[in-house]
Image (cartoon, rainbow, N blue to C red; front, top):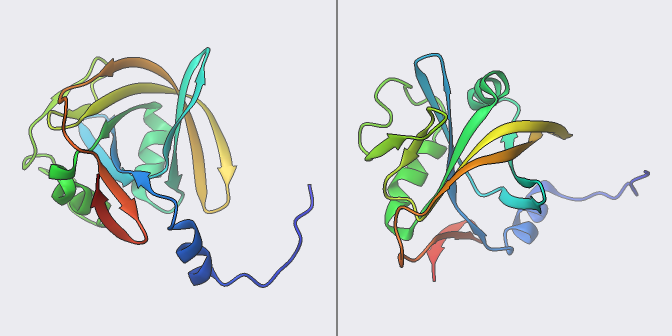
Length: 165
């Protein structure tokens, strides 16, 4: 596959792709006794047979190495009321100890943290990892599902800002 070389400005690229509204989720993993978390808007369904989903993890993020090693992860799809959690878990370099203390959560079947305030939860085991430039595309087989809250509006991200329906 050949790419046509064109001078594309990264800021213009962000502005253009930012017009695609996405949901917001927090992906969690557990390595040993340590929880690792990361806010994502790059989560999507891939396949119904087998049941597969994916998210993208920046290769430089410490979460990347943790999820590559643990190979189990959970996704908590956020309602609008959890914007503060989304912002917190998007912040680089936060202390790992006690980071989940502000938000009620429980352990899923795989041991990963899932947020009680989520509108949907998905637990996965990694089935494939693909190169995605400065990110890895992590594909997971679905092992458990949940809908903790019903009827709450989802948290969205559009044009660099949080929004809701």
